[in-house]
Amino acid sequence: MKFTELLEEFDIPRAPEGNEHQTVGWVQIDCPFCSKDSHHWRMGYNISGGYVNCWSCGTHSLASVLHEWTNLPYKRIKELIEQLDDVIEQPIMRENTKGILGIPSCVGHLRDVHIRYLSTRRFDYKEIQRLWQVKGIAIAGRLKWRLFIPILHQNRVVSWTTRAIGKTMYRYLSAEPHEELIPHKNILYGGDYVRHCVIITEGPLDVWAIGPGAVATFGSNYTQQQVLQLIKIPRRIVCYDNDREAQKQAQKLCDTLGAFEGETINVVLDAKDPGEAKHKELKKLRKFLT
Ligand SMILES: [Zn+2]
Image (cartoon, rainbow, N blue to C red):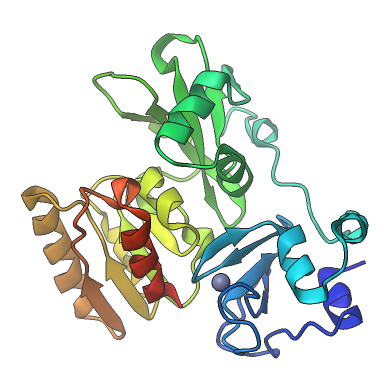
């Protein structure tokens, strides 16, 4: 059964074809938690991933969403979800290697230390795994005790970076040029999930904190290639770190983007960056995405 068939069966309205909120790979419905029957179509069902996300109030489990809409018991909902067959397996990363994409051999599942790190940063590790395909690196030379963060472009892993979970000199260590299919500085982390509005941040953890709709430029030194992708998005919210150096870059980026059609806004948070922002501030920030 396809997700759209399930919607029809239970009379759950979806955004009409050609609606501005419609994006390839997503089916848009109303969020039963924040805007039921509003026809704002704030919730997206990601067809290949089989999960839902509300651009206003964040991620929810598919079961809870269907329960809100249908009032069916969870047992029945679980059966329905199991019947969904339009979920395509996420790309298996090592199949891409063949001497082109170099994935470190030490990448594995998240260990307890990785999970602990994520929860001290207030991330739900299951969500980070599911949405961002993050993995763990344990004992392994240069990249030991790091989070492995694949960088996807058009649903394909084209590069990667890693984030230290302990104190170290280098917070991020990324793929070398010979290990990537596309240089990561040429793309936007999180770009696949963007619709008509984007929140531009510095790092993947900022993106995770905000959720789908946010992208990272891998540091405040954005590139021309990243700018070319950003100008295609009608509404652009720049949200770099709140220190002076980063804000100088943010202003520069705003000036560049502002020369193109569309809307560009610079947002300075109370927190150092979105990754460290309080729930309330993130919620306010997400409002831009709706
Ligand atoms: Zn919502």
